[in-house]
Image (cartoon, rainbow, N blue to C red; front, side, top):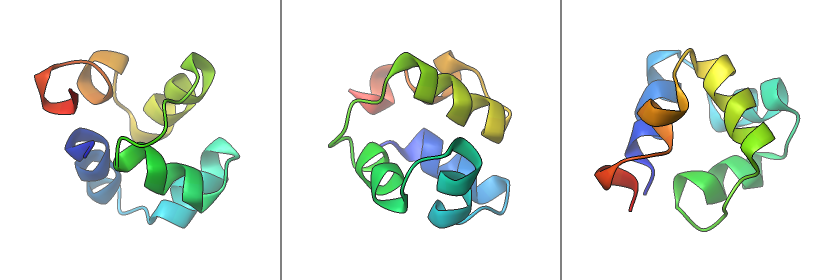
Length: 66
């Protein structure tokens, strides 16, 4: 699970559907990213980081997501 992304989304008060709309993907894509079942493109990672006010390091890199 990508707990960092899920926690950041919750902190912003966004549902999976709302985040998906912000970054122009389906809700299913957000679900799969949070479950570590989909490897998003760099552009999508950047869009998610901007929407959640986080850096790539904070959301996608590090031990917690491995």
